[in-house]
Length: 221
Image 1: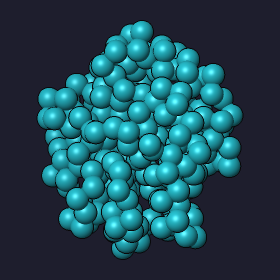
Image 2: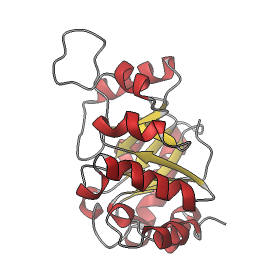
Image 3: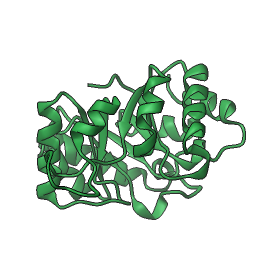
């Protein structure tokens, strides 16, 4: 289980976080951070990133398959071999069927891999919580990549997501994401009952990454 509060940076497929740039970005985060952070590189970069950091490394996705004839799929065992500590599941940019989410969560738990199931609304968050992942991350898709954070634009919905998750399974921790870019957003998210945030462009595309890292951490008391 990851320690909280936590800041998780999704590198997505942004140009500033490809290949050697992914390693450099990770080094920048690790050099400047004092709190709990985790990084989520592109699949091809996970091994290189993992070899160059002590931060927790997650996969952006794994498929509901076992070793075998699964051309083009992302295999959990391959990502474990590359060094992941956890994985995102069901991100709004790569959504899955509920049965596949359940299968992946179970397989990850069997192999002691942390699970973060993404949800685009409070009801989906509740359904995800019933599967018993380590975390549920609430991210309204209309705010992803934007300049307005979910914790300021939809605070009441974040609170609703937290409540619905806890009503189903008190052990599941809630994160929120979409539009997170500074310490105020992080503080607001924590004040609403979450245990951390997911962000991407707010840091990956930032010109002064060191400044953004320090600002984000200012939101954690």
